[in-house]
Image (tube, rainbow, N blue to C red; front, side, top):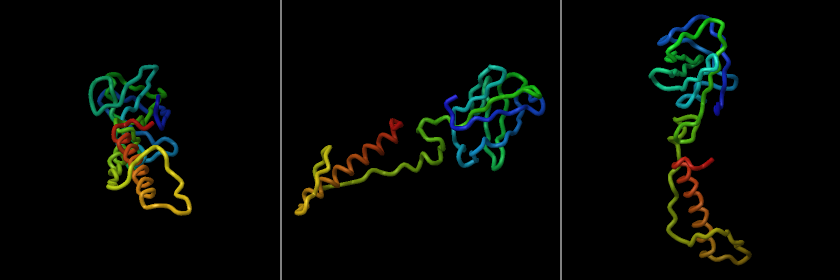
Length: 156
């Protein structure tokens, strides 16, 4: 399912389309670890439904303090005794499991001196200011490239 958390849940009662049921958090997960995630999936009798805020053929998720509330928008009744599989935490568009954390991307560094290259030289026993400036500029540019890649969701 491509997720960070999977929960098998046995339905205690019938839940018709448009109604809700609650499940406990998967082992090792909490509201903080799953809040803001997208792309979950519900599997019922081999039928797969995608997480969405609303819409036919989907299910909605609300992460509470101690339980997860699922809204059944699948168009069918989930029956008592049925074992459903829920996945949570598939990555969102920013590549973060927690959308709130994705906003905490660092800003780029500004370095006004030095020349960047792909090698960090050994400063040696008698180093120069120019050598140190070049090292700082090289490291700054590499950090900025990582920040840009993270913002563009290209870091794997």
